[in-house]
Amino acid sequence: MKTLLKKIYDWVDERVEIQGLVEYMGKKYVPVHPHSIWYYFGGVSLFLFIIQVVTGILLLLYYKSGEELAFESINFIMSKVQFGWLIRSIHSWTANLFILSAMIHMFSVYFEKAYRKPREITWVTGMLMFFLLLGFGFSGYLLPWNELAFFATKVGTDIAGVVPVIGKPLLIFLRSGEEVTGATLSRFFGFHVAVLPGIFTVFLAIHLLLVQRQGMSEPLHISSKSERKTMPFFPNFILRDLTLWLLVLNLLAILAVFFPWELGKKADPFAPAPAGIKPEWYFLYMFQTLKYIPGKLWFLDGEVLGILLFGIAGLLWTVVPFWDHKSARGEQNRFVNYLGIFAVLYIIIFTIIGWLA
Amino acid sequence: MNSHMKDGQPVNEKKRDFLKIILSGGVLAFIGAVVYPILAYLIPPKEAEVVVSSVKAGKLNEIAKDSGKIIKFGTKPVILIRTANDELRAFSATCTHLDCTVQYRKDFGTIWCACHNGKYDLNGRNISGPPPRPLDEFRVTIQGDDILISKKA
Image (tube, rainbow over all chains, first blue to last red):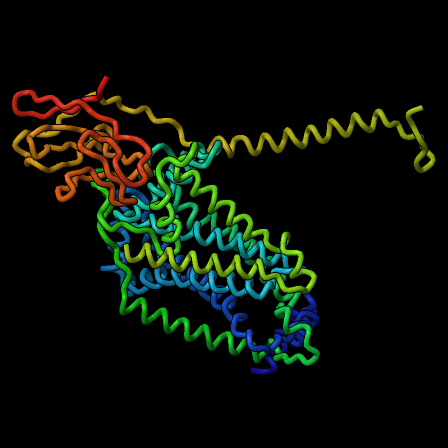
């Protein structure tokens, strides 16, 4: 057995010279310090991405897009297909945990200032993937064509429509017309299973390549110490990663089995929005903010103001490596910390208020 | 003179500029020829809309006092309300805030949008919450037993 594997390895190595790469990976070390725990959330996010790809492909085998087919096909998956309820429930739960895990990963990188030179590209590709994740969440939410999804899509695309100048064409592009209809569903289906995964995979490849190439960033206050502890990436770190992946898979199984994802009521374009309607938790803080902004403020429409504020905040956050020069020089930047704490508190408080309302 | 020597050959700058313009112009035209059809493809074609000017909203005895219901007005929802003092009114049911569909709330005696807690009075005026404009009013007429809803001129 061993000789056969060795033979295959040699056969490949003779043609594509992988020996150098294997040696490189063997020499890779991960820094060990009190903040090392945060290194794991990137890996967890990657694992959740893999689960989404696998369960997504499985759902594709039975899902049908279309006003008269979508809801019924998910119902079919959940009630008739063997383990269909499990696959669908895991896909929905993973979507939520994925965004949570990506958020934890993002905030930990932010507070450790791991985005500083030379890792600007890693940060920016990570942020772009995060925005794509929100796009995945938003487009995937509509696919079951239920009541909540219908109104969430109406509101979400209407918000896109108030963006100055490009708003109206953007709304038509997203909805495939003036209204949210079966045409919107087809379009969102295309985004969800083809456009977004394609773009996401490119960013993910760059992101992972850079992480491997540059190694893990060390927090500022630790890199100044003379004594550094490390552990080999292979096998020590990889094994810890895999153990955590296994735990996450167990957590997912528990959630999917004991808290199965609801399908809800089929969308009816001629029914009023149901009382207590809320978006998914990761949009809740923005949704809650919109409730507080009055309809007209000075000369701006309330939602235009909301969009501009969140847009500018998101942009500043994405380009933080380019304006935080202090961290790049190895100095403490308290302003970045306070801004990050404010963002975390804002998101948590507004999410809770939105949840309770 | 507009030329210099390269590899022992005189270089004709004018000829070179001409080729640059032709080449880059060609590349731009090519990109345009590829991108334009794709962008145009993304815009959905306008479908001929059936212009609806009035619809039957059912019989008078089908709607109770102090209640409301959603009526299909072409592709858009319209809310028909029979008030507590037995008046019939109709408004566009699309919230002027973010496009949700409104409903009549007996307990508030107002038109209410569940999405962002917007409220309108029974004249369609936005009275609280985020809606920026009143709801468009529709004309309600009664023909025999039938309720007719039509666009206000």
